[in-house]
Length: 113
Ligand code: 5GP
Ligand code: ZN
Image (tube, rainbow, N blue to C red; front, side, top):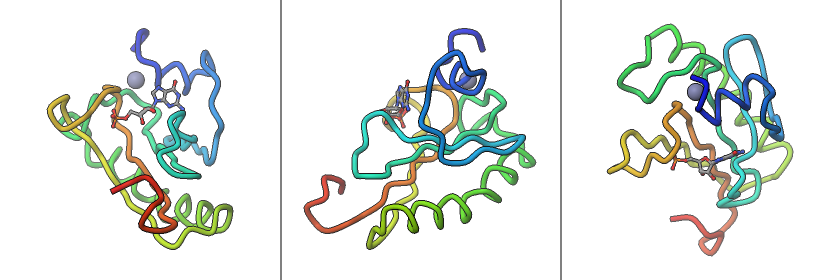
């Protein structure tokens, strides 16, 4: 998708702070950093959201999530980690390329929830 910012990040047309990458999946720091280490995990292939995601793409994405979560835990030492995914604008989706938010949690005043 030529006008998709996350496809541009995958292609290297836009910069990102990469956390993890393999052939199918890319994880990078969210610009907004709800909390320190807030990371987005995306399939490299353009899927708008959960509704158009093939099971094998979902499998490859979620296969990488424990490893990425451990890397975040090792780097930022949070007390917890929320996984969040918004589908559709009514649910808060702003970028229409599937992404899973990994949001490290530090304390009750850490800015999320
Ligand atoms: P959504 O609301 O769609 O679930 O989340 C979109 C997320 O993408 C937001 O948290 C926003 O900060 C992040 N985002 C938007 N544009 C960029 C960008 O160009 N680079 C990065 N790293 N994150 C972005
Ligand atoms: Zn895309």
